[in-house]
Image (cartoon, rainbow, N blue to C red; front, side, top):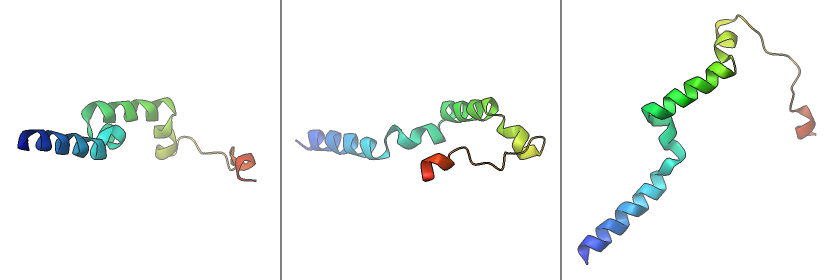
Length: 63
């Protein structure tokens, strides 16, 4: 009985910590995030090589 309870508790703990944030802490997850940043050329924006447009492309969503 105790073994089943421990197993159920462990399952519940995994669900709470779950995969939602696992991608931010795992090596593979960080690699995917970095790859996404490279695709969006965020490095160029951060380094000052490019600038963001002053026009908000999502303005129509807000109004």
